[in-house]
Structure formats: structure tokens, C-alpha cells
Length: 213
Image (cartoon, rainbow, N blue to C red; front, side, top):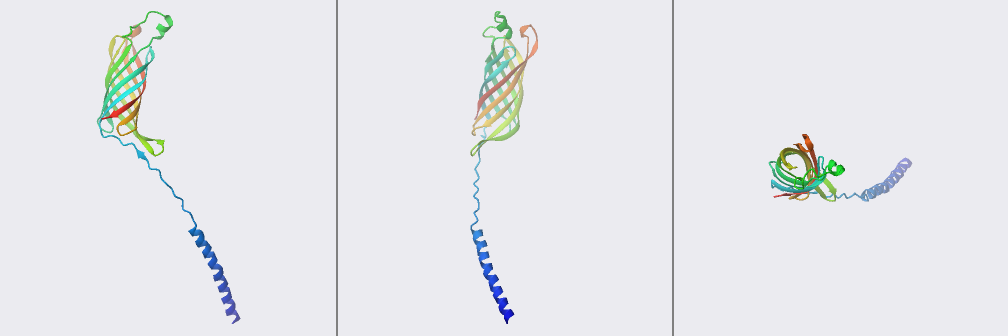
């Protein structure tokens, strides 16, 4: 009888101790705070479906032997597909003085009209690396890095010669119809100026706007 009574008391004590423990665990579980994670909505600039692009650029042209000059260019492009495009371009600049003219103080080698540098030609471009840039906030802009090659005519120093053009272009699409261009190119042609025939490299760095229509 004593043993039975002792067992009953022990069981009652254990049950009594267990109930507060379970209650505390339940309270702790119900008081747990789940973090709220809000994801930012990324809004990409949609690309226009039009295939024609007109671009206006301004930059610097390093005319070999004549220093650096300001350059303006107008380009019309047709996108054959997502990878290839054809462009026609007209660019112009005005050459400065040669090192010989500046140091010797002699009579100018060229007249004012002969210092006008003009290029008109065509090129084929290929988009190597389409991508995106994240300037911050909720926006992302599509980009396209391309390379191109072509040819045309250079009118300079009283001569009209054939020129090759090579370069690359980074285009950032601001809206569905407007983009910003950064272009690096080289106009290469043969010249007989300064009493010798040589290959002239004319490097160009330009920034501009492109409009799709």
C-alpha cells in the first residue's frame, strides 16, 4: 500500500513539473518572430522592336602628325538581326598644325580648306556581348558591346584616299528608343604627305546618342 501511494505521489509530481515545461516551450514557440524579407523589383529597360537607328556623336580624333581635334559624326544603322548590323557614317574634323609647323614657324603646309578632314563609308558590326548594368535602385539597363569593321573614303590635305575603319562600341539602352554610345575606332589609310608614303592611323574616341525608329 505504501509503495503504491509513493508511486502515485511521484507520478503526480512529475506530471506537475512537466506541464509548466511544455507551457514555456509553447510560449517560446508562439513568440518567435519570422523576418520579413522584401525583394526589390528590378525594372529593365525594354528594347524597341524597330531596326533602324540614327546616332549623333562627338569626340576627339587624333590625326597622325597633326595632333588631336574635335570630331562630329552622324551614323545610320540597320539591324539585320540581334547579332549583326550595317551602318553608314559621315564624320568630319579639322586638323591643327604639324610639329614641324609649330617648331619651325615656316609657312603652313596646308591651306585652311585642306585641313578639313572628312570620312564617309560603311561598316558591318557584330554584337559580341549583350548584357546589363545595375546603376542602383530598382532599375537595370540593357547593354551591348560590339565590334565592327568597314571602309570608305577620307578627304584630307587635298587628297581622296580609301580608308579602313576598325573599332568597338558599347551601347547602353536608357529607354526603349534611346541609347548612349561609347565608340573607339581607328581610321587607317595611306598618305603621301610630308614627301613620304606611309600608313596613317587616326584614333577616335566618341560619345553620343542613338535613337531607334
